[in-house]
Length: 196
Image (cartoon, rainbow, N blue to C red; front, side, top):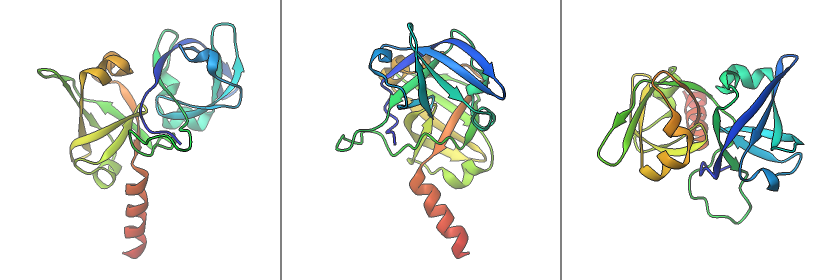
């Protein structure tokens, strides 16, 4: 389990196809503290460290992951948000994030405000049933509050600290982002569907 509070970002050093999977080598300032078989969130996707290298570490993304996330579009030199799993007893500063991405949404534009940024996104119809105003959502692994949601669209506001310390500063109009809806909201919606 994760909290959506990003620890650092990692640079993609190489991408090596292996059948329908890809092995991604990354480097980050926490690389030396990682261990094989450790779960780490990469842009919100829970991946297992499978190898430690001289320059960093390697994770494997299988075909199912590549189909449902934006990891398949990564290139050498790209950056991803990193978060190690939550320790029992730690404060939950963000919200409960599983690292199981529900899908992708597209950044429609970037609004530069006086001291913050607004990012509107568009995705599939699940947005209308699984997001609520002032509710939680994970975007590329970042725990955020939904400012507004309607008609397959939702918007989040980014403070300067988050902008500078995550990959939001690299995001461009038209980019795909990984989204994970609030797990509590998903269970509530499932209960409502079964009651209907």
